[in-house]
Image 1 (tube, rainbow, N blue to C red):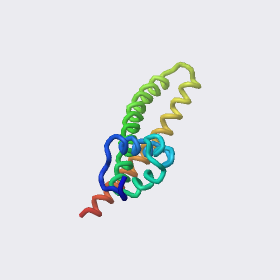
Image 2 (cartoon, helix red, strand yellow):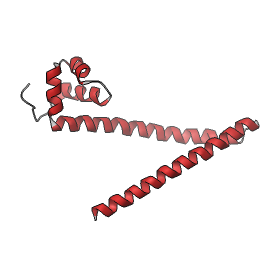
Image 3 (cartoon, one colour):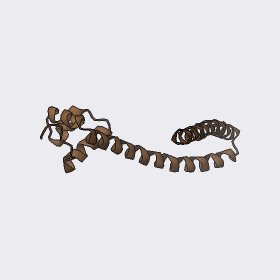
Image 4 (cartoon, one colour):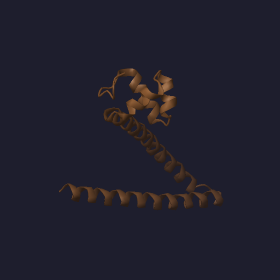
Amino acid sequence: MGESKNNIDGPKDLKFALLLATGSTVESAAAAVGYSYRAGRRRMENARFRELVKETRNGILQQAHGKLTQLAGEAADELQKAIRDPDPKVKLKAIELVFTARSSISHEFDFEQRLTALETRVKT
């Protein structure tokens, strides 16, 4: 490999980036794709390669967020059913979960709105 190459070398680098993005150490990821530890470290010195690892990690997190958002909708539907359960214990637990979730979601939504407003002000 040359000294801190500026290009990404196809499938090996893509797999190396994926392994790093999912939590593998440089040593284990390098071994898995057939790089020496030193070669793996050299790849990590490359700004374009580090950006690839970051983009890969962000893509994985976005997929997980999408799945969790979908599940949250399904969970809310189930909570709605549980609130109508004839068993008072089930009903009370469901109500408790609704208020807990609502509070958490409200704080998150409020934070996101404030952050967006700050980012908009900084840009202008």
